[in-house]
Length: 403
Ligand code: ADP
Image 1 (cartoon, rainbow, N blue to C red):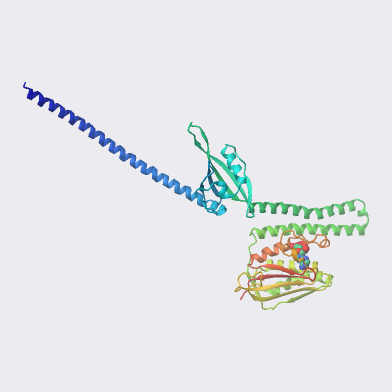
Image 2 (cartoon, rainbow, N blue to C red; image 1 turned 90 degrees about the vertical axis):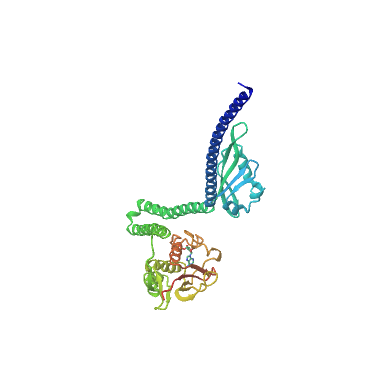
């Protein structure tokens, strides 16, 4: 074979070899292209998932009623929800936790949590609020592969109301115990006196048994008023509203209280237009009126009690809410001992009694006005008292009129 043939054969082999390489490369290219496409799809899926997770995280932070904050190891705040920013103000980009919150006492909590300690809840005060903080460390891997705290998550919530309720519950139990102890101690003393010989003396025994009955009445009244208060407070005693002539509601109570007033030679005067109607629950309103007149009788020695009512437009200052509202304003005025001005706002609290020494002769649980307040407010009205602390007291309450 000539040299020309050898060259031609060599070229053919080279061309065939390149063709084979080309086809292989093309296949590989196609495979790579398919793989790239697959990876791109996966990447966009992961990106979408990440965006969705971030949206969810943001929504979760926004929905929380707690202030949620993430503090990094260098004390930068990397995340703070709306509640947190409302609490501590807008968050500057480079702010550290302490410069932003100005709560130096929290720094130690952050530092100790970053040091890996499990910290108990921490309490601090801000703007008259008591706040509770829970801290948890967020762990990440360091260069040597070990997991260690890299940030701290803080959850802060307002426990002011919770603390107030728990104090109110403690006071409530203490007050009930106190109110129970007095009649129970008397009952014990009276029965002991009976057992120690008074039983043999008929008139003395009758006298002591009457006293026992009076103490039992006090206990019964306390139990009844506690039950009423809890039913009214929990909304389990719904109002049966209807249009009633106010005068007849008042007169029904006066008829029952007249003997008590007469015993103390006190006058009971009603000055109410017989046509004046109110939208009220008759039984509940009767309780309010009875309580106010009964208090008037208890705390008055000379003179009497006058019950009047008038239609008004808007509540008198400082009780004014909407000057355009029409109300029936009822007043129960007595000529009794009066209420010291600094105590007048407290008499509607449960168990509040003014100067227990002054009240010693008077029966009463200190719950009557608390019940009256709940009932009036359930009708949409307001109740308050005015007194100069010496010459009598006037209680006012408002009710919606029935046109
Ligand atoms: P109580 O069962 O002790 O009467 P209330 O809640 O009705 O309870 O009244 C609370 C306190 O308010 C009374 O103990 C008394 O000190 C004071 N108070 C109520 N009404 C009068 C009044 N008309 N005059 C003087 N003090 C009053």
